[in-house]
Length: 120
Image 1 (cartoon, one colour):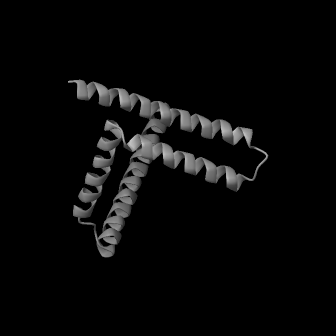
Image 2: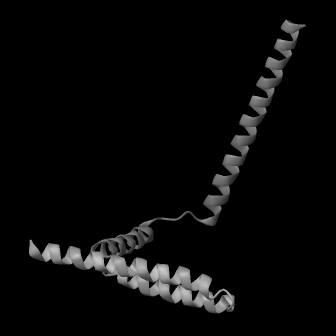
Image 3: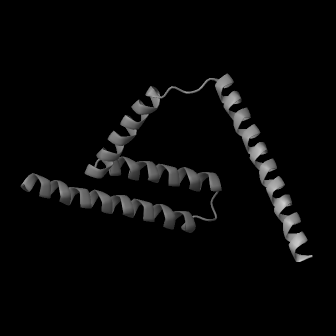
């Protein structure tokens, strides 16, 4: 029980460090606004990388990294369609959309004609 409490305390400290680093990056970007944009972007990327590495050391960060790794594994299992299958499916969808559009246009024209007959 005490191990979980200590890990929770350390996680809180790590998250506080992450938030402090991100705040330093934001404030530093505005403070050094006279410097080149390249240097400011490189500084922000470096600070964000360090903050990300610290965040990955927490329990939630570890769970997130596990989710990313398992997602990559699942993506490798997907059977992606070939170019020919993609083109054929796209053509079927386009033809179907055009047919439905023509049917709706015809129905709209018919109903408009009927309403004009009733109204006069």
